[in-house]
Image (cartoon, rainbow, N blue to C red; front, side, top):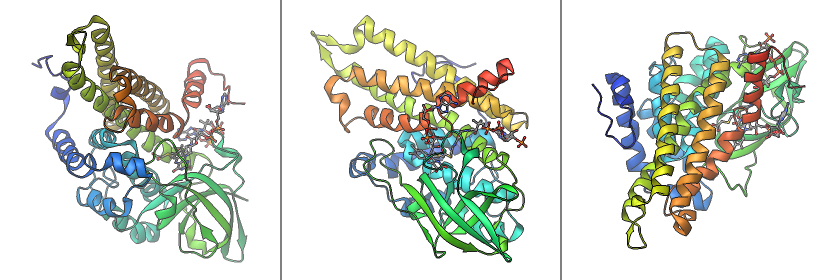
Length: 390
Ligand code: TGC
Ligand code: FAD
């Protein structure tokens, strides 16, 4: 029997988790409490994050590529991975991004589509956080519509010559290896590109108001010469990169709720302490209405995330169900972050409290991994049979 008394788990959803899931969550939460919370406001303000130092720590905890089997990866369940994402994003969406891009995009691409040589070369070091990966799909003119990408790889004898620009690439400037998607005579293919290859550069994008504790970059590929072995044999066509996005989107379904939970936790403490008109802010009906509604949305989002996790672990999760989860949970998390911010008045706009930082981060989360409109269109197509993208 669960008791509905935990403010942040009102429905007693914890009782649905198994021992492994609770242990992964506790370990990740401790890491975030010890290493992220004391520093995150400063990193966010400075627009930086010590990703190279954090990666080996995350690797030691088994959080990099944690849902993959073999090659030094932890081989844990999808639900455990989701719960870890939730704790990481309770710290900051930038931290979850670091882990998502490493494990669900760069490592997953190599794990799923790469040659044995590519897997043994990169995956063990990436799992340890000794090598960092990035995932280059988006281009300046092709974000929601990656099928139109202009980056091209052409054959030159046995070699490939890769030319083009990718935009908004998480971890780009610090990556040791870039998974880059390009048009070829044989359709869209993925390439494993060591970032020290001549002609490859990754200037960092600055002046961001969101995901400030995350590195975002452009990838410039100026006739990058690659050996024949650089292409990933298992991916042909857009379904290759989209298959990786399914993994990262799944993590976000849980992750976004971590940011929302962190905001609600801060708000519950604050409204109990803040005195207005001689009474605690918590004692007013309008405050309680806000808190109740946010608790309802957090609970619904968590039930949805857990259900999708169970489907994924059972092997029966459809990518359109992931779209449903990503659309709902990011949208509601952003609404919760903004609503919590109102409860703090002016104090809510500072980095003393997490709401504004989470809300600003969630603007990126709403956009990346498929914008909310793209996920609405995916659901619209599933519901009606009509594709309305074009
Ligand atoms: P469409 O014709 O529908 O599909 C092309 C081929 O792909 C297959 N497919 C999928 N396969 C696996 N998983 C999915 N989710 C799939 N969706 C479609 C489809 O069956 C087809 O296969 P085939 O064999 O017939 O060729 O493609 P479309 O060009 O009409 O595009 C559809 C659309 C809109 C769904 C897609 O382009 C899309 O999802 N756009 C959004 C792009 C996006 O999400 N980009 C994210 C970039 S990475 C990122 O943001 C990282 S942020 C990370 C962080 O910091 O956390
Ligand atoms: P656009 O596609 O230009 O969209 C603009 C607007 O038009 C949006 O509201 C969109 O929903 C809407 N729209 C698009 N198509 C339609 C349509 N058919 N009908 C109606 N409305 C439509 N990409 C990577 O490849 N790798 C990364 O690591 C990565 N990291 C990122 C990190 C950050 C911080 C951010 C912000 C982005 C990152 N991205 C990454 C890019 C991200 O995936 C794209 O920004 C996203 O896919 C949207 O593309 P766009 O920005 O070009 O917007």
